[in-house]
Image 1 (cartoon, rainbow, N blue to C red):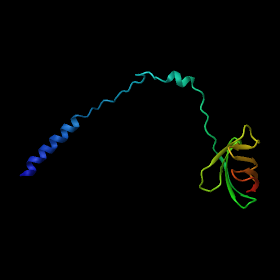
Image 2 (cartoon, helix red, strand yellow):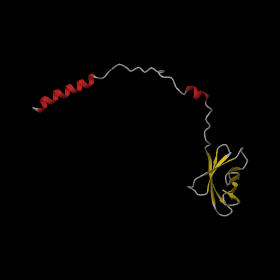
Image 3 (cartoon, rainbow, N blue to C red):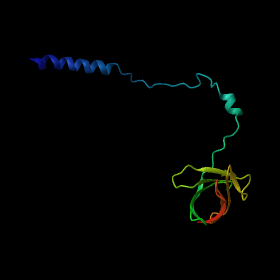
Image 4 (tube, rainbow, N blue to C red):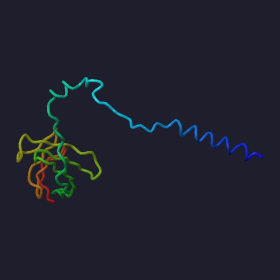
Amino acid sequence: MKIRFTLPFAAASALLALSACNSEPETIVGGGTPDDMAAELANAAPVELPPSVKESKTYRCKDSSLVYIDWLSGDKSANIRTEKAGMPTLVKAEEAGKPMVAEGYSLEGSQSSITITLPGKGSQSCKS
């Protein structure tokens, strides 16, 4: 008995749900609200992306310590780490080929042989 009464009710519910669908395509019209920042964005200075890592090298220094250098694109900056997973220190130069410096740090040389100065240590040469 229950099947006879629930079947028509289920069919009526399905037809009601389908009848609510609209088969016409939806039209979207742009240009409704003006962009509040359009003038600011048009006059903004161009954005310069940070340099990417060009090459990462490990160097053995004269005192047998290891130094990890990430050479950055543009040849005017590098990241120095004294531990493999340590925090990097960014050193920069005004132009390519000049020594890269930061507070207490100095780095110069090529990617095969460098001279580095670290805080609390003197200048020493290192090789990759």
